[in-house]
View (tube, rainbow, N blue to C red):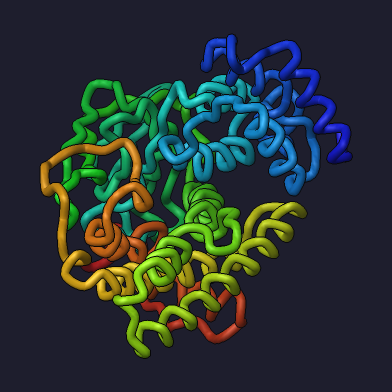
Length: 393
């Protein structure tokens, strides 16, 4: 299935058999997955048709035109953008069949248990321990900055399984059932007033070895697949011209001439050009991804995204004058997704501060770009050949 017209025909056949106006939403999504029209570049039987990745927008456009329900991608973004590609690459056939369908339909929400209080930018320093106990692993530790953990059914989890080897070599990757005994999710209230993030305590959590992704000790290798996909998911998504925040700021500029100043005009034009350049670069990145897994280039997109989001939200607040300083609601709540478009300028300004931290800090991403894209010398490392247990803390 390699032709755009063939895919359009397949979608039309599907819609004829599953009228979106009369078919139950969940039943519709399950049937779409089973027909291979979920993510068309995935293998047949796993939601796809082994078609080129670049044909996915063709399918999505046909469903959108027909008024078909989507799977609420903003709510399940971690599952779609991070867990699914990792499971596809490293999971067993049983794991793929068990997890991918309810993940795509949104029946099961996923979160990401990576960062720890002492292992954020340096993820390989993590200390959450997993100790083998027969066919299970007993996990103890703490994770932090975990989005949507309060509604997640499953988590992708990286642990320390061998403290006697250097930190990058002694890690193992698991799927963790968030409903298991010993999993304690606690809210972290943020600058916005919300608790979108959480900290997660793991106390004697028993995880079957059948829930391991990849080989024992190869958790860092598996995690790299997750992280590269995460950065593309954050910074490389499809966007029309003047889509997202740049469109909102430009609309205010056009509709409110009394707010204009020469300085704000100069900044708006500069950011408009940056947004357009980033949009075109993201299009190119997605085309490159059609040939295989995402590489370190996704780090550049995520870095540019964070910088531009923060610049635009700052400009928007200034452009709004006193209205830009207003904030509608500081009520403590635990949202299921980040709503950058549906909230006011003050919320966007505060929430954008996290863009340069989540998905890899801007400082770490600059290191990745310099070393793995530009080929510059690596920073000196004194912990490279030292066993994790011997590292100073």
